Image (cartoon, rainbow, N blue to C red; front, side):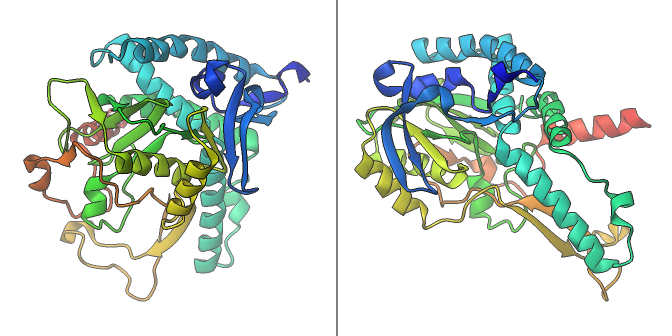
Length: 363
């Protein structure tokens, strides 16, 4: 057992240091929602971590650390220069990898997979009580879920390579905050359409991603076939409205596991006000498994095959939805004219192409 790597981070330490108290790199402000506890100068090295989260040998933790060392240089340069890399360049790929890695290694992701598998088993037994469920869906260990999630990182990275991206610059005295699950996926487009199905999958039309880099910068990825963000030729977009800052910060409360992170610019009164604001919305990332009807694909997906029984299992998680409105982020005319398909999943062209290519190569 490698006890030297007992405390294993799912949030990179280099990332948390960007929110350290007075840039001392050792302390960070925390607010724990479960304990309703505020502390301005908590130990940074113990945050965003769990004991032996990746296993007892420390191998995965060590390899992730090596990747983080490379990614930290790209993030540092962006923060210092306020310049984003060219699309499809190596630093751009680093940013996508940073997003995918930070998201897919998070305990929320692992717990959601466990919850969905458990929910699927329950629904199958509800439909077919005599099913030998362990033969159909074998029980997986925690390490199995970790391995599966991490192996999908390259796929997710390539899936979002089509998204445009800009830096949202905080021009107010009110800081951006972060959390123990900082990668927020959102979809103003499908939210406004009142789309009843999943809105925030990595391949979905209208996807947006918000991830704060420090108290002044949020990295924002978005589907440019739907949205316009600021001025076309500018790679940064300034936000001067305090309510917009609050809305972006509220996303961290909706998305987090249980802990909010911030630097010295966030006081207790402000954090508690954000908590109160967040209570108006449902928590994101909660696993859900539902039953629906199978339909006839050859009849324009309109004819239900078996009216007597719902026998299609649909699994997913709750989306982050707060009726988000940020100055300068708008749905443009082409986005407004987009025609929805009759599919449950509304894919972007890039993602649809990836699926078709994979399917054709498998034959």
